[in-house]
Image 1 (tube, rainbow, N blue to C red):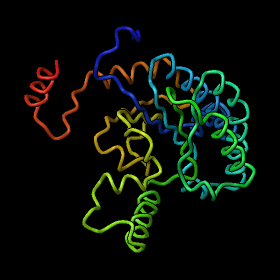
Image 2: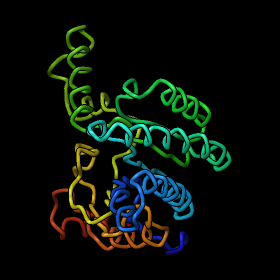
Image 3: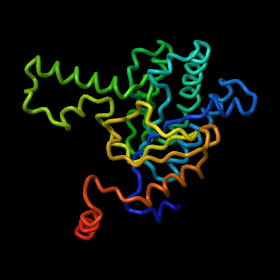
Image 4: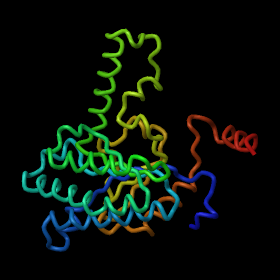
Length: 251
């Protein structure tokens, strides 16, 4: 799929649920940590592929709030890998002019990782065309709770009236307030669920599930997922006839 020939219904924002590191490793007789390390390499490939395929926003589900329940040794290894990814990729992000963001309860991360995240965000904050967001200590339910608290505080302090609350107002309190909603959510490894990832923002996203484990995910797999997306018709509650009519009017 060449960029010059891309269809009009092309995804601008892709969210990735990166799943299957542990099973990939187990099938090869390797440790789960080895699987996660291979998963970091897949992250690097996909970030590069998105820029090559003209996808301007990529959000990676790097560490969920529920992942803290995993064995301590695995959690520690994941924290180390996240810091390793940031250190290794920061130069590339700057060279490729990719802006880094992070969403989630970042204050719950280890201090050294939090510092690395903040430094990487600061180093890339002037870039706008290409965007990478890491979901860290992220939970969609926590995000909704935090947004509700923000709205409640604004009402209590007289900065907002209850009658003025609508979705746009509520969305301003979300972690993703400065990002477009995802057009496409991809989950690897054959699991068919969102697992608390961008649930509100994905209300009208297309979902693509692939059996490929995350460590094996390549640019070719991403292209195939994008082709699947482009073959679908996004109706946003309208009928197919209404969508076709709108397309004709906009030409």
